[in-house]
Image 1 (cartoon, rainbow, N blue to C red):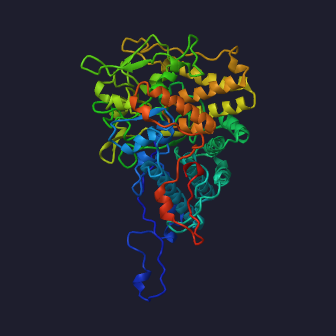
Image 2: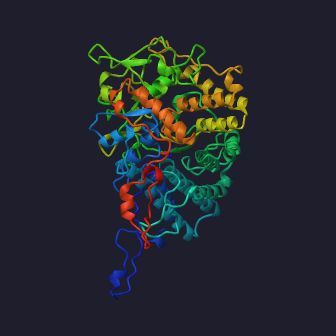
Image 3: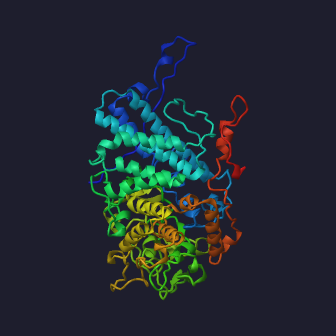
Amino acid sequence: MKNKYKILLLGVASILVTSSCGEDFLYKDPQGSLTDEQLANATGVDLLTISTYAALYSRAAGVETYQATPFNWVWGGIYGGDANKGSDPGDQSVLNEVEMYNTMSTNGYISSKWGWVYMAVKRANVALQAWEGADDMTEDVRKSRFGELKFLRALFYFEGVRVFGPYISWIDETYKENNPKVHNDVDIYPKILADIEDALENLENLKDHKQSDIGRPNYWAAMALKAKILMHKGDLAEAKPILKRVIEEGVTSSGERYALEDDLNNNFNALTENGKESIFAVQFGADPDTGNGAFALNYPHNSGPGGCCGFYQPSFELVNSFQVDENGLPYLDGEYRSKPSVSVKGAGGVDDPVGINDNTIPVDPRLDFAVGRFGIPYKDWGLPGNDWVRNPVNGGIFLPKKHVFSEAEEKAQLTTTYDLWAPGSAMNLQYLSLRDMMLLYAECLANDGELSAAMDLVNQIRSRAALDVNIIKLADGSPAANYKISTYPSTHAAYSNREVCMKAIRMERKLELAMEGERWFDLVRWGGDYMAQEIRAYIDYEKNYIPKFAGASYLPASRTMLPVPDNEILTLGNDESGKPYLVQPDPWK
């Protein structure tokens, strides 16, 4: 039985203390509110902790879930070149400047992401304040709740750092006011890592035991998050032993040893979720309050599953990255960019599909797991219809796929609507996964010259992808495309040349984590120059198939973060000495 967190709408209010008048009514708490004292107990802490989990997928203060999701389909996916905006030019037009790399500090999605980070942090802080005064919890529960809240706050701030860089305001539970004014002149990485250390210390008793609910992080989830933070920070030496332990010793919150799923689909299906590959997943439910609104815009259009709204269409560049050579290995130097595309735009008429595939070109089978293509079965829905793509000229001919529910899930009533207008799903999404950790560890090994060990991890990932269960078949049982995938032989240059080894790992992350909102953050981790080079190559390639990319700007190497929202800078203003509380990063001034 799946455990799903419900969003509890709690009114958390402080007592207003006034000394100028004597009337008793001025000292009464507002009706329908809860005071700090009323929440400072086991029940209050539990409710506030659940409210903090709910911040992973809830909306507040005008922030739409799909604009600020920690799964980053905008900033990790579109900005990283995995996908185009899709849909029509006039729908969510604020995203047009994002996909063209003309993003400004007035962009609404930037404001939403910033607002989400601090909304989520506020929930964690309120819960920690209640925890401090609660003396009716058992020691084990008390430690677990504290560890969970520190884990969540670290995650929230890490999301802020990934998008805005490490110079953002740090606001912790010592601030009681609703909108504290705090300078963003300190690197907050040490504070995030201190939160993770608190989480590890307090979740250590769950190292080899089950959590009370499967969706709560355990010790190993905190270890994995620490490693992911360190990798983004660029501290591979410290991350390396942590990743090794997570991979070799870690267990899920239900007590199962981490391992790769044989069936890739098990990681993206509400009927098989919370499995052995999932380290920390956001728990979604089959109702509007707890359903996955993160991808509410990103389903096939019209008669397709979900029916709305045609956003987040995989790019031609991503699709063609899945081309392989005669040995079933990927092209590590961008050679696919000079070859014919595996799919091209069709006429889209009654007898002509929107997309036409060239099945003489061999491709990695993960292409059609991550991407919907015409003529290829789309999960268990059959072949895509022409009206599934909303505007091929604007967004291309491909469909998002991983997060889209299957027909079997719909029949099991594991779908819902978001805000009564958009599709939603009970499918959990993995924020931390074993596949991610294995490839991060491979980077650490390669960085230290341990090339054989690094490539062994890459080959484990590739071997899983090659299993027959992951080969998409037509109705007659034959492969739906010219699928070919092999492991790297020990004679390959990746086993003896560090640079080639790192190329192989980076390509493997691109393929394995395609459309999971990681791409731009990986490019940033690998350095501003590398990021700028890859974004330039993406734009130059994409404009061959989608003309609007001729108007895209190249992203400079210095912009490894997004700008602080203008409205936040204006709202906080200046301190008493005239110094602005929020200062724009130099590359955005």
